[in-house]
Image (cartoon, rainbow, N blue to C red):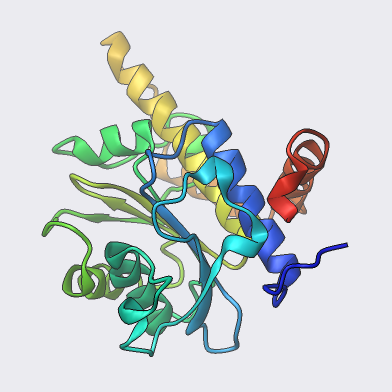
Length: 248
C-alpha cells in the first residue's frame, strides 16, 4: 500500500512514471534533461511533470511535480522545475488545451532529422506515413526554451491536427490526449526518423509513397483500435515485474 503523501492523480502519475522509465530503457533520454508533462484538470493548466535534474530511469510516481501554468511564482518554489521545462511546458498547457500530454526529447534520430536543412519526413514506410501532414517543423530556433521561446513554440501547436513538432536544431516534441497516446506517438516517431535516416545513409533512391496512399495509411493508423493503450499496458506489466518502484 502506498503511504507517501503525494497520491493525488495516482493513476496518471503511474502512467507518466512508466513512460519516463521506458524512455530511458530505449535510450530516448538525455542525461538529466528533457521533460514529459500531463494535464490533470479540465482546462489543461494544472499538470504533472518530472522534477528538476532527476534521471528518467529513477523517476517515481510520487516524485512528479504538480504545477499550475498560471502561477508566475512557480520558479520560486523550493521544488521548482527546470526553468526551460517551465518555459516550454507551461506555455503549451496554457495556450493549447488540446495538448493534454506533452513529451519533449533530444532522442538521437529525431534530433538528427531536426538538424537537417530539410527536416521533412517523407512517407517511405508505414511508420513514416503515420505522420504524413501531422507534424510542424520549427525552423526558428531561438536558444534555450525559456518563457519567450516556449510561447513561440506553443503558438505553432494551435492546430490540433499537428501532433508532432520537429524542433529544428533542437529535438522533437509530441503531444497527445493522454500518456498512452503520446508515448506511443513518440515511440513511433523515433522509429520513423530512424528508418528515414538509415535509408538516407544507403545513398540509394528512396521509394516514396504517393500522397494519397500516405494519407490513407495515416488515417487508418489514426483510428487503429487500442494500440496505444495496449502498448503502455504492456510496458507497465514489464516494469511491474522488473522495476516496480516506478509506481511508488
